[in-house]
Image: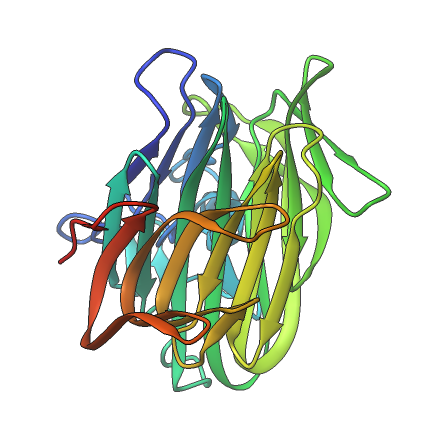
Length: 331
């Protein structure tokens, strides 16, 4: 697993990504949960694993709890990332790979992929998940980018399984508000797809289950496709999102500054006079002047601000920079 956290106190916000092997031996107890997420916000669960419920008394229910759509993960044309054969066996198992991992005081980033949809009639099919933790003063912004390349038209759905204690409220400006016991927990804004709520099931202990909100962000298309989900504190102004030929930019208001995210793998990502050729870059700039305060990047080959080329490398690099300093440690 990969863990991103904003602290170690009991009220910390912690995200866990399942990026390991499908299971042990014959994977009898595995789920189709490649690159699935679980998220705790301020010490309380927001997105959760659905659990097991039962083993043999109800085959259809067991398969439903094991399916990708029951997890905070992505389906393609409704299919799971791994194919079930029986109650304790699998026809095909997805293989995951973590390609980049960077963590520090300026945020965290993990980039991972899996091959679970490679031979479902859509070859070649790339499936990549990028998760960012971005500090915003006393709170945290989470960005989930699900990036694909499909050779035919497909329906993509990014699923988010909420905890039973969460209530979901759709707002007029398109954001989704999460509440617990009447108190605001966080707001989610979805880009690249349409969000809708259904009812899922969560099993906290074997043999029991209870209803819980379930969100799906859906998009149809082919070629380079991205589903972007941004989770921010209650009342934070809406981010600005742009997508162009597979490259994307995201700006999150943060008082007198803005958090910026660029993804440019396969195409140059641009934001004002800022340009990236690489997997992902995140940073902070002043409102008005646009002056950069800091940035970090993974898988970067070229970074430029106007005519000034900050990084130009034949190989992809993980690196960064803080205003008035030498580059951050890179590798």
